Length: 171
Image (cartoon, rainbow, N blue to C red; front, side, top):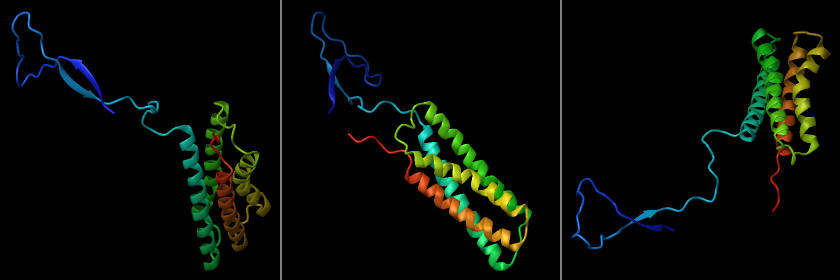
């Protein structure tokens, strides 16, 4: 709903209009929109949105690695440097997400998060190093199957962690 503001307006294209001395100058009305009730949100993403986007990245990255590992297993390939390098990035991505989550907790934004959310996040981080410790660094076809299965399971853990994450307050 527009507000009317009675202020004189000068239009440079038309020039200033002069009234007779002592005469009342006519006022023009300007339309000004009301200010929004929502506070100003600067452009860019907030930390909660960054944390949610990192969760989506973890889920998709681990799912892609799991499918890639299944394809390698079905083709009879063993572990190579490309696949191991990609696998090593999975816990690092989880650690970055954990760091953003800890910042959110320190800001007081982790109040509505269920405790299971933290457990699923920990499983995402420790599952790949646990498989490496279990296989003792083997690079045969069986290790490819273990990594692929654990990465698909880690993707499911990430999805479940995302489901148990931030819940808005009920009004």
